[in-house]
Amino acid sequence: MEKPEKIELVYEYKKRRKEFGRQTLFEDHGPEMIVSIPNNPAHYPDYILRNPVHCAIQNTGTMSEHWVNSVRAEYTSSGVSHVEGGWPKDINMSDPEATQRYRRKIEKDDAYVHAVMHLGHSMEHNILQNNAIDMYETYNTDLPAIPPVENSGCHTVNVYREPDGRRPIRSLSWQADGGAKLAVAHADIELTRNSRNPQYSYIWDIENANAPELVIKAPQPLLDLIYNPRDPHLIIGGMMNGQVGWWDTRKGGDPAGVCPPHVAHRDIARNVLFINSKIGAEFFSSSPDGVVKWQV
Image (cartoon, rainbow, N blue to C red):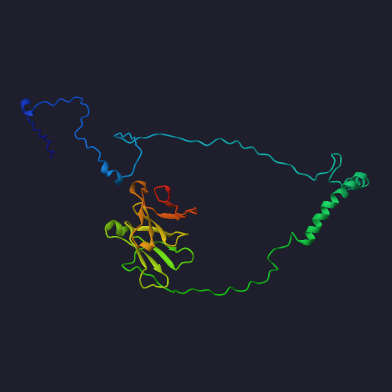
């Protein structure tokens, strides 16, 4: 039985040139400004100053080749043949009679007696030291047995709970000069991203665990809250937006001052630390943006 031959079906579409439309002709054309929006000076305080940045961009990634080779080091092998020293070349060290004769000859020499007397003083000093302190004894063998350590323990006195929830605690700070106040900074990063509700921190009196003594109302959640080591009423804190603020507990929980945005960190202000200065109001602030700021 013969196989049927394959038949290729071809259909040709025909169209006149005038039905294609007008011919497209491309040519070079310079840039054209579509719109220009001038700067508004009233918005300057809301942004951070930044040096001009020049960046060249291509439609393909830039690739480069570089290789490094370590400095070549040359090694040599050397050794020392050590034999029993002090013997002349004409004395056979393996012959006991020859070495004994040479010893008797040296001992009869007057220079030998003076050399021994000269070395005797330093040798006597080392012997006396060894008699006072045995340098070759094994340490910790004659020590008395250490009595067992008393069992220690701890118990909970008070529990200070956040009134409105259980957010993570970022820092704790005791009041200076043995005060009875404890500053606690609360901040929940995930909650802040998903909610615009304010997150407050608290100051507790350690004798009263029922309610906080003062509510610290910060514009942003606090990641660190530190008491001033000289002024027990002054507190500084670092916020999630990179700003730092300070509070006077005698004036309430509202901030006494907050640094402006253009001098703040570009990332969260993770830590603040007071400096031992004359005025007692200078402090450092640090952030994951790689900058440490000295502020007053």
